Image 1 (cartoon, helix red, strand yellow):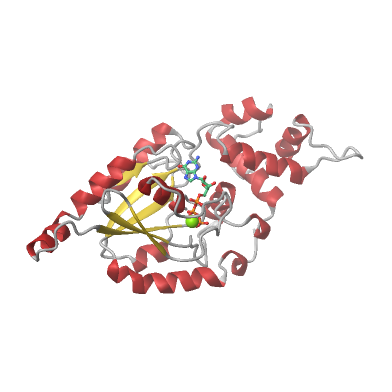
Image 2: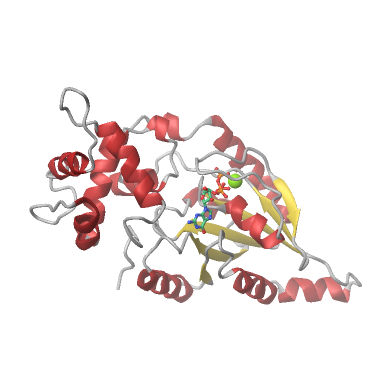
Amino acid sequence: MTDRINWFPGHMRKALNELKDRMKLIDVVIEVCDARIPLSSRNPELAKISEGKLRIIVLNKSDLSDPAQNRLWEDHFRKKGTPAISIDSIHRKGLNQIRTVAQDKCAAILQKARDKGRIGRPIRAMVVGIPNSGKSTLINSLCNRKLAVTGDTPGVTRHFQWARTETGMELMDMPGVLWPSLGNARNQLCLAVTGAIRSEVTDLVAVASQGMSLIHSLYPDLIEKRYGVTYETGEYLSREYYEPFLEAARMKGCILSGGRVDEERFAKLFFDDFRSGRIGKITLEQCPL
Ligand SMILES: Nc1nc2c(ncn2[C@@H]2O[C@H](COP(=O)(O)OP(=O)(O)OP(=O)(O)O)[C@@H](O)[C@H]2O)c(=O)[nH]1
Ligand SMILES: [Mg+2]
């Protein structure tokens, strides 16, 4: 899809190194995953650095993902021993549950502090995750104030920053980080389609056409309804993903003056549709049953 150096710029390596030092100050790690890609949005480097720490997984952007899959993924992670909560940071859904679970998880730490006379010691949480997963939005919502800058491109936050909630939690925001290898081609596609990788370092048309095929293989009705196209086999990456993409572009009027399809314009329109939920509520990685 692209050269690996491009999606792992120097500031991410720097952030991972800084994170190691800062981890000492932390009681609990809040891992912000993207509910549409619960596996690909988990960075193994972050897992390594935060090993041994108390952890809460939040499946953010659950307003955009498939509600049935949200429940399955929550159960999946819980069964593996980590509490997982589906949240929507923009509309502040699921946030109380984060507070409750954090209190519960950190009860022993807080008790120890009380025993030493430190009443009201705040819980210190590090909010970690890949770029664009919604860490800063979550922090703003938990704090009820716009403390951190947010934006719909990856790489908005560039520095570590503390924030304090009204309910006595201290939260540290950090730059979103990827990792050098980014998993297999499908993982990479999931990260690119959801917007975790800067669009400048990806092939927009390849990502959009493969992404549309992937969605079709999982939710054929949604693609057919939105773009009026179907695929022959319904299988992802069966090498037939390009033609329906072009057909959908034509249907949406993305045509250049000579009659050629404006693939790039349609790719952007498709991303916009997917990322705003206009195609439907979609989970690109379905939970194993
Ligand atoms: N629909 C929806 N959008 C969200 C949600 N949370 C965040 N967003 C959007 O996702 C985009 C990224 O949000 P940020 O909070 O800047 O993400 P971040 O993880 O801090 O990103 P970096 O700082 O680049 O690592 C923004 O456009 C947010 O409005 C959510 O729960 N639902
Ligand atoms: Mg941020």
